[in-house]
Length: 245
Image (cartoon, rainbow, N blue to C red; front, side, top):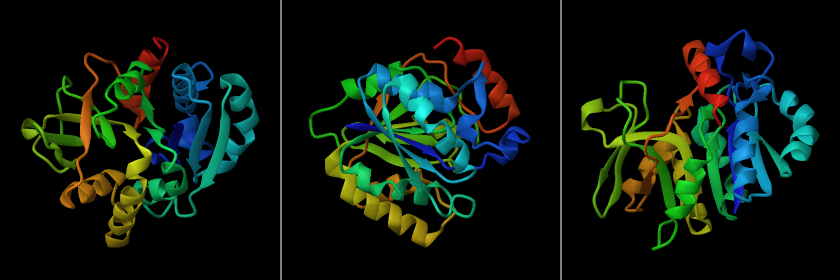
């Protein structure tokens, strides 16, 4: 199993930082970035190889590759997303389809979270589970969150932002464990998704899988402080909590 980070996005709501940097390289704790924090998490759970999907301002990631490898003891493979500024992240995850077959822990490049999330996912492996989503069942939800409805014995039934918050089981935090056995079916679902609409999220690819009868499981992360950094308010929160991890 290897780590996988989606770090191709532009993050325009974080300008001026993202005028020159991809969102994953915006500092959140001194010089540490979300990518730094994620690589540290991966290293702590014993992953030694990480693939990073890059696109917008990708040269900044290429320039830091050797430094990051040395700092976290991992080997980085950078995967170019040629449509990062045109299409949404369903295509971005599909770009990493070749590494999915090795089994991955996927982390969005804008999610500040503790290593307990990865540990929770690893502890949930087994019993035929092929895809496991890290789920926050504690947080109060609003319209912007990626909300999930689950059903006992059937896993995820619906995953979308376009849902009444009160109906949701919880929020998907942007971290997933994907077993090798799921790779081919997931890649096909992602392809179907972005071919239908390039603006769709990879979570819409998860929904495509569910619609096909594929079981996607969840692992509640408990009382965990985390944030998805979309704007300057999120960045301020990220900087408050990043120093805790």
